[in-house]
Image (spheres, helix red, strand yellow):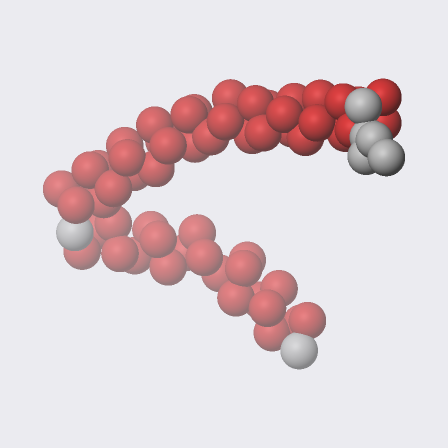
Length: 66
């Protein structure tokens, strides 16, 4: 089963190339959208990791008070 997923994953660039040749204008638009989303995703992931770390540290020092 893993081999099937790996073959499918490795064939993705070929499928994208074939699709982009059939639909050049759409591929430029969708590609640009994916590019901008991927650039915006890194700061969002970094912010989420920072919140998780700060939340854990806060809980360690100000945990459940009884």
